Image 1: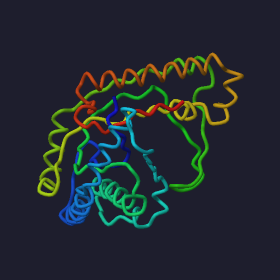
Image 2: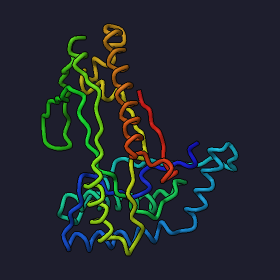
Image 3: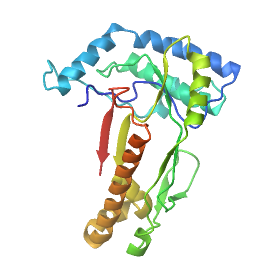
Length: 259
């Protein structure tokens, strides 16, 4: 049973490694101090209990979860001071959480923990994603279908997961050296299982074809969606077998399935 709900409520270090200059480290440490001050508010513990009651059908009131998305339109979030790629990525997540807590204090509890995502590699689906890019980053683009027949669809292959324990521990050590005296740092697997099957379908077939295929190519559409579902279930199973699932380590998690 999901004990409570969260989304974007914990900072995490992603990627295969973590490198940070002294200057970037100073910026991140100040953000971490601000975050731990906010996350230590007793209100977060109260929200955890409310979510447990809610998901046990014993809730006392409706709970509100707000997902702010347009971060690039918020200068106080997207104007980053760090220079390194790893540092900028983490700075962005710290600023997201701090902004939302200050401006949209909903019922999602904050965790006073910095998570380090395990290093994992997986093979692709066997087909590229092509787009017509008509401008720069952030500008409009168009789909370029790469599946145009059942023969193309059968080129899809199921991805395989491989967990890199040595790289994961090295990244964990680097992050602890920088933040360990400010807040707990923990190694974690994935917390949200997010399947967006029609989004992937659009990547290979195009958005217009997504709608017309229901009528004109139902067999091919069914084959592709079945293959995607099989592949995602396989990713989840392999991740659990390799110890990448962190549901018990961190009970705040959710499962998203989008078709």
